[in-house]
Length: 245
Image (cartoon, rainbow, N blue to C red; front, side, top):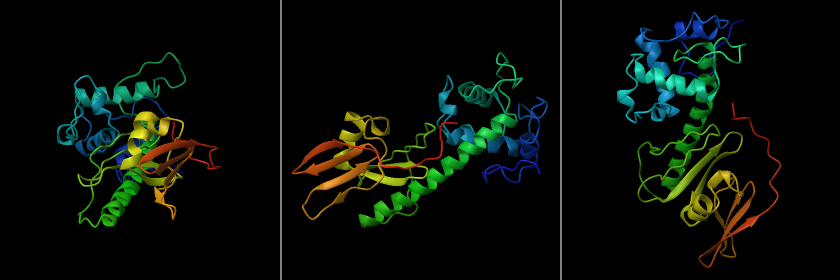
């Protein structure tokens, strides 16, 4: 039985499936002149994962990148992606070269990352909708205007002008809101999920004592009488899928 795509982004495209199942001969790949619909699927994945923003002349407008033409910018974006993950050819030669074509290993890794990205996107959209509903704000299809992908599946967003907060998501953990009082202590003072507190795994909760607490993998933040205090502690025993690729 051959390989199948896990992400619906690529499913149903016979050419991409053929490339995915090529034993890395270097002959099957996407490149200049490839069919537009297959190229668009590749470009959409690259754009959502922010690779066109990494080229020397960054492109932030999706309509300027997802066009079905495998041109110089797509070549540069693919090259950046493959350089990041050392996808060289021949695959068994450490000194092999890295080109701008999208072959089986490139598609395999993009497929894996898109599964995580879309899981993240859906979870955060649902969380944003909950935040709006809790505020009594009518909002048709909450958007996530500030996306960031760093391989660990983190997205931070201010979910509308009337809600000052951030949303974080991690596979096997879930999506949580970091509310306004905790944003600066968490992001600026502790470097967000990369700091000592790590990822949030609860929303902020105000107890009967009037103290608001939010738990993170490395401790908690506590708000009492307008003062936020970080309390570091032992992380809970939670296992995660490996997002490092």
